Length: 174
Image 1 (tube, rainbow, N blue to C red):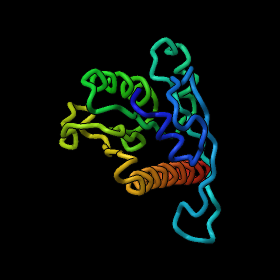
Image 2: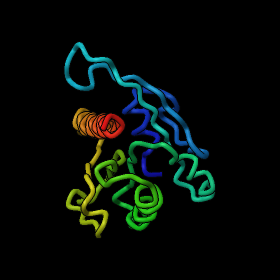
Image 3: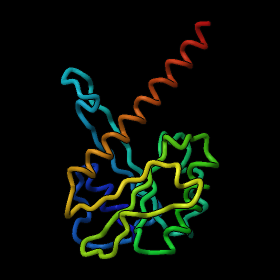
């Protein structure tokens, strides 16, 4: 109930399930293309798969399959719920630390739901979460800022994948 599906729909420009809350059962995969992600009009678009995973721990046995071959992890939480601050430590441990993923491949999103109150902008997270990129999302107040932060994150993942591929090719050549 942190807003994962709402943000996944927003980022992928999907209209699926808008206006009603229905907990994700297991995982929901959204595929979409983003043209000109690298900023040049001649470049090919990128195809993304966003795997909107349920926050319910009853699906824990599925997590290894969800994580296989992932290039990045976005952890979304509601900063108004103290229990979420503990839960994101578990998500980080399972989805980032136990994977061959770097912290730069992880994005933390403090999602502010409509009508939320309280000063959660000055959120202080404990180590190791405090070294991750943290953004605040509020789709009512600044949807374009949220979209730009996700695009920056996706660009960093594309750069990472391209650099890894180049290193692998160079190691084969030499």
